[in-house]
Each structure stands twice: as structure tokens, then as C-alpha cells.
Image (cartoon, rainbow, N blue to C red; front, side, top):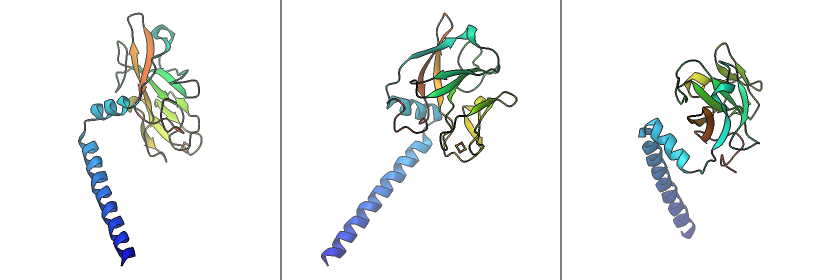
Length: 172
Ligand code: FES
């Protein structure tokens, strides 16, 4: 009898958790993407790191960077067309982590279709679409670093919109 009560209590708590979890998912689902990204960023105190100057970039050629620390490799790109999350006067400067969200392989840039490609299990991520996965095994899109460019053309990274592979928090 006592045991049955415990089972029943446990079941009710599980169901309550499920309802609350579903409510949370539903609430998250109706948030506009920009608000969801702002909320995610609000959880972490990101550093503002200078990556390069606009004059250092060559059209459609990747520049190696690290952000938010030296253990997190990334790439800085001038794509040549205005894109989601793009910074600078042409809205075409973007930065991404190059650690594949699937299992952390180091990815390389393919200039012909402006994707980052994984040598591990061949996932591909679209740099013109905010790092959206176009094929592969990962369960999230590629972390994109938010950029600010000052009057002198210096480019600063100041946040990330997804969890970087292998981390419980983007800022350690
Ligand atoms: Fe990149 Fe598996 S590690 S697809």
C-alpha cells in the first residue's frame, strides 16, 4: 500500500514536470527568433574581443579566429552579400565556430557554396543562412558569433547564438 502511494506520487510529479516542460517548449516556440537569441545571450556574460579590421578581410576568404577564448576556433568571413546576422556597412561580415556541433570535428570553408563542411560525417552548414545545417547529423545549427564594427572598422565578437561543441557554457 505504502509502495503504491509512492509510485502514484512519483507518477503525478512526473506528469506535472511534463506539463511544465511542454509549456516551456510551447512558450519558447512562439518567441520570435531575435527574442529567443537575445534571451539565450542574456544567460552568459560574453567578452568583447577584437577579431580583425575590415581592411584585413578578403572577399569570400576565411580568416581563422578564436572566440570567446583561445580554445574555441572559429572563422571570420566577408561573404559579399547582405545576410542574416551580417555586420558592417554591407551587412555581409559573419563569424562562426568551426567545431562541428555533431562530434566536434574541425570544419573547413567551401567558398563555392559558402558552407562550412565537416570531415567527420560530412555535415554542412550554410554561412549565408546563419549557420543553418543543410545536411548532416548535428542536432543544432552552427554557433554564430554576433559582431560589432566600430567607426575605425575594427570587428569585435560579443556573443554566440548556440552552444559551442563540448561546452556546458560558452564562456568558461
Ligand atoms: Fe561533424 Fe559528425 S562530427 S558530422
